Image (cartoon, rainbow, N blue to C red; front, side, top):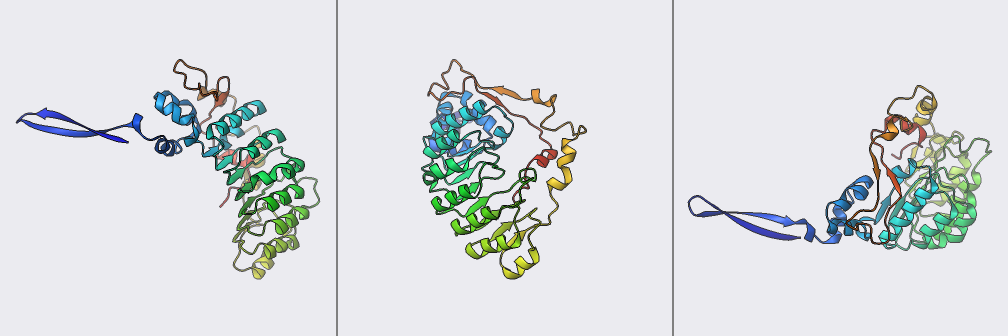
Length: 331
């Protein structure tokens, strides 16, 4: 950053000096640190149109060390839109992204693309994604640096995928595998998943397995193998004897299984026709705050990674009722 001084003559022959800073000359990495505090909406629709230097920064790797499009992806049901957004942002990161968070990854090929560029990846959050056991086994070795993993409500994977993650992500210390009650409807148990966690993820310190169909024995196996475990989320795991678990492991912080949360309180209420007007599914609301990214005369997106034709919608005012369609928030 460059500081400049201007002097203005004032009565009496004295000069008053003031300093101002040249924002266009601020180092790109410094600008990137500032821009990361902005929302995705502002990063994609406001910053690029301020000036050419800012547009270059937001089109480069400085702003995309953390790719968080979780909220945006929840609001878009078109796989091609999500695929294009992920490809664009990963390309802009130059493969240096350390975190990626999105919901509803549509297929194995996009997961493979993420894994192919994951040399710096530490945090991988892919809830509600359509990845399979086979693809996880194929590409998990490329995710060796991952330390936190979220595969909540990924219904197409099971014990095989969890074991592959554990064996290849040697530094994994956090796992979120929270299920929605509907996800496990019709299943008998998920003891095989609990065993895969216990046998392949010994360094876990934080584990969330809410609403998994497991019993006390399965949880004890996890606790006995994961010696560094400090926090365990068991909300909705009705087959677990919490009192016995706390007697056996008094230093382990356990949440649940009996916790009053959004599933029991508001899920069916939100599904009713009497939902609040601020629901994300309100058709009247869907037309507000629309932003579309297109080409412009300034060549903002001439880096080859433009968002022309990619519809970017942002909805404001999402009410608390939306939480009924989500899993319990982490403490």
